[in-house]
Image (cartoon, helix red, strand yellow):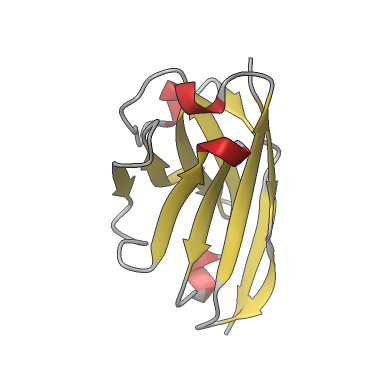
Length: 124
């Protein structure tokens, strides 16, 4: 089993950037496909980005494509989400998730392991 801890959230103005970090422990990190999801107040959790074992393949939600970049450093057991040109509608709790399959998935139910989340608030 893998344990996940997110960090890097905060309060920023529209147009700013943030980098979220997901630190993993417990099992070999490189054996897990990883994903980022978010949940805004009053809304269901939604897919943001996903990345395969080696970091060579990424997929993104249309709403963040071109602004967000997912990456990973398997030597540091860490995944990142670089968020640029942030908008108020990006305000949410951001979660990282892990699955024991290579191919990045945008389906929430494909991920059995989840972190506790980090709050991102973007003011207008």
